[in-house]
Image (cartoon, rainbow, N blue to C red; front, side, top):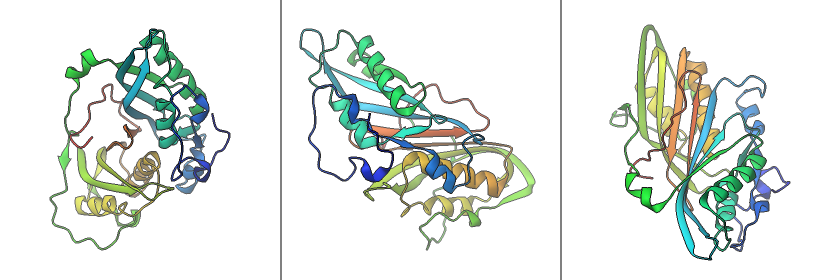
Length: 278
């Protein structure tokens, strides 16, 4: 595991040589608290529980006899972990198994869990679907009411929580969704595309204002996990819901998708059903 802690030291945006023999030192953890300080979230008093659900579509290794194996892995990294894992380093780490012999898929899952737990600083759950289970993989969209058809004018492309508003006289429970979430990598500026759902109970959120706010991430540079936490905190402060869950599913890059979930009310999703764009 890398001892560096800032994105600038990560492999992002740099030419690297792929290693096909197991190497856990390729993982690059980054402290979560630096960005949480920016949005006023104290380490000792997180306003949410949560998990980052990663899907690894490019997972391959050799069995004990040297025959290649493939699988789809799901990783669940607790939001309470002190560190997130930079995605390119995660990709390089997974590729280091390509020519590595493993006694069994269970041994592989256990090794992945140990390394990722060490990198994140909290227990990471790992499951691997083998090809015979691929047919059961499902695609469906986020459940809720989509607000993307609202006919709004937009001329601002940076997060602006000041535009969020809600009607304190109208208390509702609803889930609002959008496919128009886009942000950029904190280091390289490459685009990250996603869909987001906001489930809440509380004063009715102005939908046009919410859509403008979400579109405001279009030129914003932050990692996926950081964007979702910013959305959660901004909506919580501006609209004062009693219950709030923010769940984003980002399209994959390098064979990995990242799906942060943050909530002060709902249990984390038990499934990992991807959207059509993933």
